[in-house]
Structures are given as C-alpha cells and as structure tokens.
Image 1 (tube, rainbow, N blue to C red):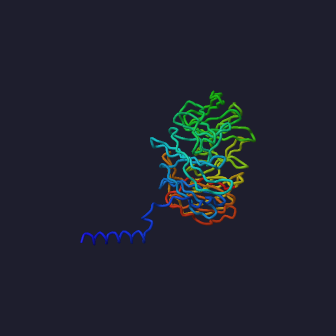
Image 2 (cartoon, one colour):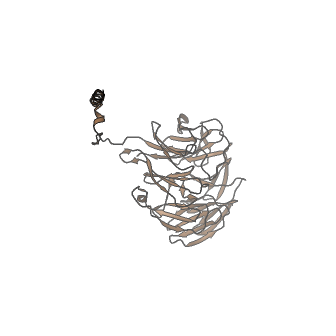
Image 3 (cartoon, rainbow, N blue to C red):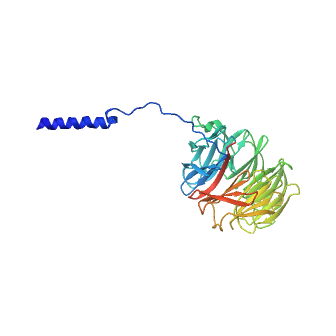
Length: 396
C-alpha cells in the first residue's frame, strides 16, 4: 500500500508540473520592453488639496488628474521656479517640523512627464519668500526665507535636483519676522511686521531703516522709481533711500498686499470690501468699492486687467487702470466666511493661462474654468477634497 501511495503522489506531482510549468522553474528576469514616458499638453495645474494633504496635478486642456502627490499637512504657500522645473511647497506654520517639499514638475521642452517628489527639506520654521505663485531670485539666485531665524537662503536651481546636495549661501537680516523682499540693483528692501522697513546690501549691512508699523506688502514702481510699503495706518513712499511721503488710507481698511497691472498699482488684502488705487506719480489713494468681500485676486496674463473673486460667488474682470468692472462671471453660490491663519491655506485661489482663468472653490472641491475674455463659465474640474492654492505651469 505504501508503494501505491508513493506512485500516486509522484504521478500527481508530474501532472502538476506539466500543467503549471512555471512552478518548475524560477520566473524570468529578462529585459522588459521600454516605452518613453512622455506626452503632450498645453499646461499643468498644481492644486493644493488641504483636506487630503496632497498636491493634485491636472494636465490641460483635457483636465485629467495625472498624479496625486502626498505632502505633509497642510500646504500654506507654493511657487514654481523660473525654469518651470520645480514646484516648491511650504506647509503651515503650526507644526514643530515645517517641511519644504520640492516637486519635479515634469514639464520639459519635449513634453510632459510624471511629476514626483524630488526633495524634502527641513530648513527651519516659518518658510517664506514666495511672490505670488513663483519662487523669485535675489541677485541671480533663488531664495527662501527662514523667518523664525531672520535668514535668507540663496541657492542655484541645480541644487534642487534629486542627485545634488542642497547647498545655500545665507544673508542674515538678523531679526525673526514675517518678511517681504524687493531687490533693487545691488540692494534689497526687507519689510517686516515687527522690524519695519530696512535696506540691505549684498554683505548683509543695513543701509537705511524706516518705521512702518505692521508692514505687510511692498512694491517697486519702475516708472517713478519709488518704493511703496503698506503700513498699519498709511503707505510709506521712499525714493532711493529718502522718505518721500506717507499717504494715509482714505478708508478704514488697510492694504496688506499689492497687485500691479500695466496701468496701475492696486492695494488689496483678504477680507476687504474695497480695492485701493494708488497713483504712483500723484501719490494719492482712491478706494474702489467691490460691493462684496474680496476672497482672491490675480491679473490676466497680459496684465491689462484685474481678476477678483468675491464672496458672493462672482469672478469679476476689472479694468487695470481704474479698477472698473468690465464683466462679471458667476462661478458658484455665495462662499462661506473664511478666516485663514498661518496653519495652512483655506482660501480660494486664481491661476490664469491665455484666455482661461482657473478658480479653486474649497467648499465645493471644485475648480471653475472660465473664459475671462468671453465672460463664460466653461466647466468644473471635480478635484474633490479642499482645493486651495493653485500654480499653473505652461508647457511651452
């Protein structure tokens, strides 16, 4: 009986190997066919989703989600480098480790590739230095500000490469603060909420200082060669290193940021009911009523017009010289009241490309795509989550 059972077992094993020959030999490890990971598109939209702690990547014009990249919670600011190769993402400032995520955009001369996380940095706390949706340069190098230490880290774009060491040179402005920067030749204006307005040279020497309580926002007007600084009670105006004047605000609202078109400078802020039109030559400020609360603003790509998103759900196209309404495009019902802190972005955002404007609607999980020239709502991109900050990178 033992022999018969042994013969039966042997026959079963032999049959199994005949039917399933892969069990008899290890899997093959030969070369796989290689394909080129490259496709064409007009632009790539990066969306900060602060409900799921992701950067959502949407390729245009088809509107398809190409990737969802996990980042530490919650994104506060992000900007693209001048060469379009990297998106730098800074998280909210309420955590003890404030990561900076460097994303390879995948936007190349030949076309689009899959984006990926290239680096994660821990430079310090309170990372700033973004101008709108861009990472700007200071004396020919990219920079980020570690505001908790009062240090400006300058670096070449090549150090963002995954294979490169992240090496920087440091300009010490000495005082921890929340900063805005504006390069003027071989000097840089540094405006801080607590430290006022200071001008530094390339060696970090302070050239001049002006009092500007609660400074938040600064801008240089190339035509008049004047600097404008938004202080708590007025706008400080400086020519070269000389105080020109202080312009009192004509209304109870203050300016917290500047938006410049080809025709004018507008003072704006979150949660205000007016734009403030600045005449850089006459040194006057004129309020421009909005009739609803301002939630987001941008300029059209040609900088001829302003785009403003209001709490009442309207996206308005406004003249870039006087701020008057040209057309109104309803994009949603009334938005809920929002009060953004430095813990992470919750407000809507606007990004533009040619005749298109993309408006994030965090309370809906949507992005409205609008033809701002024709005044038409074209479609909603159903992102889900809570889309806030937007950065659009053209593919050519």
